[in-house]
Image (cartoon, rainbow, N blue to C red; front, top):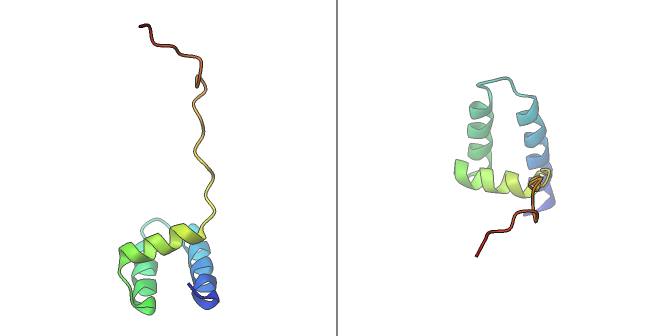
Length: 68
């Protein structure tokens, strides 16, 4: 992925975060047409660009033992 595409995807991620309910589909469709890829490919590329928080570990992790 080149720098131009990565910058475009970062801007798209910001627009998606600010989009109202029901407005993301039009943005994703236009971006997929602009990049010449499918929606699934666009979602994969967006996932590579976004910085999501890691999943939270369970509060009882390591405290439960199963009887043998």
